[in-house]
Length: 415
Image (tube, rainbow, N blue to C red; front, side):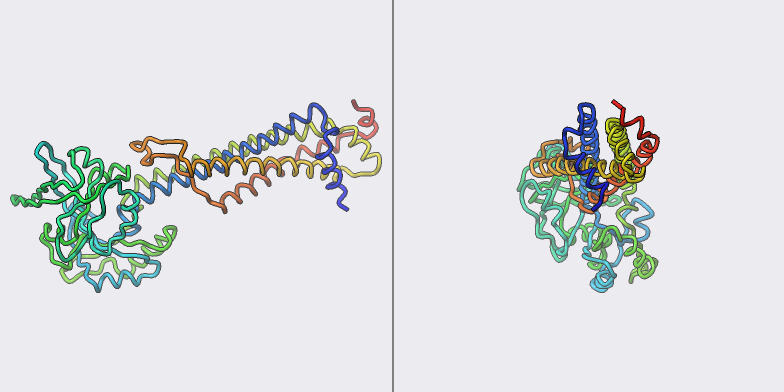
């Protein structure tokens, strides 16, 4: 039989042993661990949810990797690159690539009777993955995007619709200026989307790849480039290395040079800002573990002082300092375990409630999302639980050496 474990269990379960002073101390220690763990888990859940929500919106507009003309990446102008079936098949066969789609850009002006707005037309073809836009569609439907003909249908953002007072199904003129040449097209608004990522919502509208290619005066096999989705975003740089070694710096039929860049490279300010959120999480974790450790140390010292007589008796009966220390460390394990269980219950309840009912709202004009996003990450939760348990237990080893200074003869008479 494990003698320290047996005694520790008796102390933990016997409320008579836990005297008036120790009861609130233990309760405070449990509360400190529970609250600290709950705050850590909720913080991790919120930060991960926020990062992935914003990240997915940026990726929705630009994919994981873009293959385009080298000159386009070096300047603000848009240069064509050959993206025929042969090149598309080459990209699709790159290890780790999940999906490839062509795109083309053209700047234009949307004009109503009373107002006008400069926008960027993004032409997409039939292979366009519309899952992201469908999730953020607020009105209408998606046009059937084509690379063979023009449907003269566009998808605009709610910001554009509000600024120009446009309604679903309404026709609008678009003007395209190339040097001294001005061309006019009439489009019909078939859908309205809203992602709350204003830097994109204010500028991007979608139409046929065929239309944008013709407006640019390019050949049928030329586009602005291809957007590539990978199987695992965490390994995006491994996939890009393949592009760098096999595709980049090669030339197409027209003498243009291929080049690739990841979404992090094309939007460094957003991703650097998201990376800074990790620092906040580490600070919160450190503070909460310190609070939990201090409350546990205080609780253990109070228990040791109240059990001084029992310690003296155990020493008189032949128990060693190590054995008695193990008794109190086992007792602390029970307290820490109870605090961890309560903390997990609180954290999971808060996360589930927020995920289902979105009780805590955000200003989408500032945070890009309407409610605080939360995300379950079981491996991270397990790591936080284990780490909290080990740290709280390890910091109690030093205070437990106080037992070696207790004299059996004096402690038996201790009151």
